[in-house]
Length: 225
Image 1: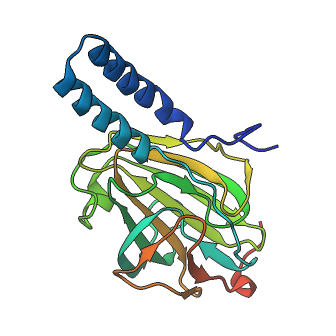
Image 2: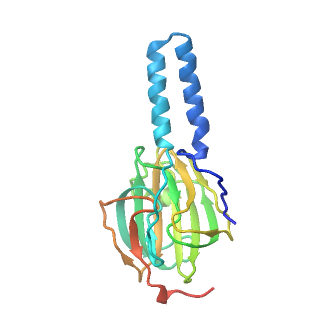
Image 3: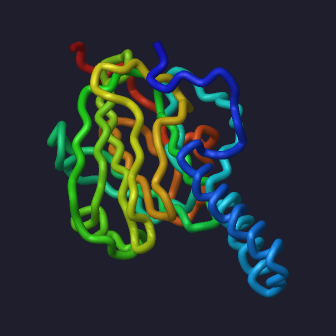
């Protein structure tokens, strides 16, 4: 059973609808009172909030060994290091920075099962700084693919972002490209993949959640669980 059942799709993240409605209501009140400058200002705010929480459909065309991007944004780092939360193994870490103009709904990079989730309180430094991975508030999601490979995601809060949303729970089965959460008002997502996998992106590239392939897995290196 899907961890987030939806009978139909709306083009906005459900968690953002209250913000959109509040802004729209305030705009309507100012318009009714004849406050033209405030009405225009609040209308702009409403449009910006709606733009931020947009949730477009995506066509997922990845193969069974592909790891797709969990976020829209710019790749700000590709480095080999130890995954510090769950596996403690040497991995490729790919960091994706989401500006306020990017879609902020996050997606599952590959099919598998959720092994663990860990929330860490922290600071709210600018998310495009590499030290944000260590110091900022963040949420860790550990996936194990059907081939036995471990993939770890980190949703990292930023300067403006103050609310991380993650819907799955340990034991949930997830599909490639499926929505799993969002970070309200900004930030970044780090993904850790086993070092034997072939990375297909480089620093500076822009990627699309569910659409861009970050790396190709070597399933023969997996472990069975």
